[in-house]
Length: 475
Image (cartoon, rainbow, N blue to C red):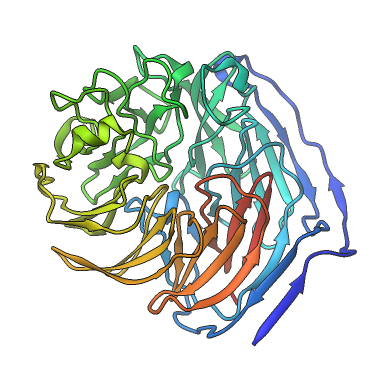
């Protein structure tokens, strides 16, 4: 059965603006503008949204109520049990004030979205009405940076929500060039605190905060890499700041002469004991091992506990072939999956990463991979530049279950028995049967930023495309 739904045409547009207050703080403590604005998000669109509904599946009956971190949890699985019955388009938001690179988060009936204009929005998850917007400062123009591909540069990394305190944490890059961790009240958009988040000794103008934040051990963990073009004296860092704004900063610097950034959009994966696993990009060395192209385990206090690196790490360093173009993900508590620009997948023992060449298993998966994976049971879904690949994983091997090689895939998520992944070249959101790879539906959302990944909650899937947010009802 084919079903075509058009968002184009005359769709009721209503705009109700109720201004709440405006107040400003100095750049060092973040400029804050909060609007209590409700905007009818059923804005007209010139794009056709097409759903092909072959094999729509009724499976689990529970829906995600909270998607508070990248891919839904600290293990970065991107999975939630959910019934998917011929999904259909929901709403398209009003234009936001900047492009969205971060994954939308879902919490307490709201979708939280951060923009490159250093703004955080809360939208009603059911209607798309804008509930509030808080601006955290002036973003840094691309002309002020020595290289890079984002302009202006504001909030790039995916924020994280602490549901116990109703706080969303974001890292805002502010003019003239400093990163601040800002804690925002998810209920009303009020700023609770703003704290400098640049590691001591770093050059903030060449450090980019692209990786997702992690929350655990009473701290927010912030990864740093470099700008597109690898300019300047940048390093891989992880910073830890207390979630209540108290105390000082803890940090880990990758011991490379230069580079070895921690930049994958999925950020670090955290195990049940609070240890953080991060992947690095190429380092500057082709002689002595420098922890470039590695997976590093860090304690809650950011003390290094172990590492893994492929045996060809010097060649990866020389070729700018980052292992860390994708963040690690847990298949289970003892098995980590890692893949990078080379397209080789690695299974790692999380209790003993094994050092150089210490993988449990490795094999070529695809030409190259970026962003973040998704995990459902023993299946890992890998976004590749030459398609979406499903791998069936055991403790010491994996094999290809299916592959759709028709598009460059953004990082996928899984709702029940359906995999969602964006074609980053065309802006088409695809749905697949997770077991067979059979195509179930497509939605065209138009242009999207690189590494765009959906999120899910309150019975809908949400995806950002440029300056807009789209919702799709699961049933």
